[in-house]
Image 1 (tube, rainbow, N blue to C red):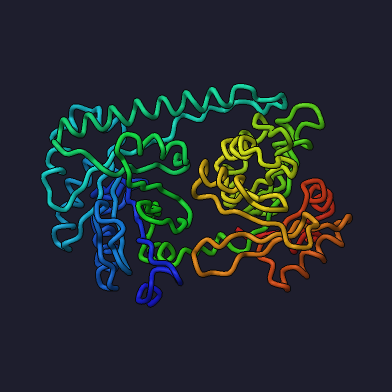
Image 2: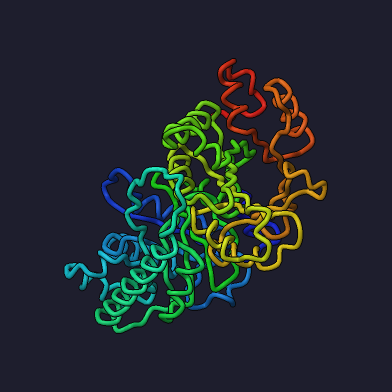
Length: 431
């Protein structure tokens, strides 16, 4: 509890962002109760947190929190009275279907009339589908991205028009559902006058510079401890990181790539790994990477790392292709000056952290930019041993030396699992 008595995070002054979903009484599956929300608001207020408006970003000071609610109907019924009680403003986000629902028109009008509420359109994830892994070059990625951005522009324009019609107010902020925010999408929103970006994260959110605020999606089961974790940007499930390393060429080296994707998932599940490092090939094998990353996310992998091919030179298009292939948490840059490649990655995936090879230049050891300003970079490596026993011993030494990220190639992992889980004890994580 005392963690919230100090700064939000060491060295960080960016606002804490929190997002709640449906609020219901009596309790229903996946929803929070008004009592839970009241507990959260009272806790924040008692520990000195000051709720701010999205329109005031950039002048918030220390211990600022931006509150947001993603269900307009329950927000009006249960949340607005609590906000008035605690004297705390909040953002209510409105998705495309909610904006188009005539029955919600009166709800949106009442929300807009409340002095405690700002309304903002929300971008929802498109149906992902389940395309099969394909090893052939993905020649249509650029055109699909262009069409996606065109749909986004039309959808946001329609939401803005609807909110202006119903409330008479033009929003200045846009909220993003988890895994929908990208630099290209942000550019589309900015072109429509939506300058404040509110992306949502189901894991610990990154620290973003205003006018961006990362929103932590408060789970329906959450008590106060979830708010503590969000404020200090730490989650015990995120550390340490143990990852499997997969070369996209390996996925395509033996028959049906779906079978090899399934083998990678099996490794992750049996060892309880929370990370994956993917070598995407040159050119980037987007037809393999997308299905592989989706399968790993479904298996519970928290950290997705991709290596930028070492011979891309100053070709930022290839960096952008890699960043578009999946929603990466970390992108490893090749040795040498970062120049425009880092800019390209950060543009397409603004929340991605950059990783850098260690000065030794052996390609296995690396460090990862800190998640929170002021922290030291995290250190990691992929083991280089050729046998299971030697790999396990190398990983144990690396852990003692303070390496947080430790991984092994998928083939070596499969070899160890054919022996026993104990043979890879230094990699296995308990869940």
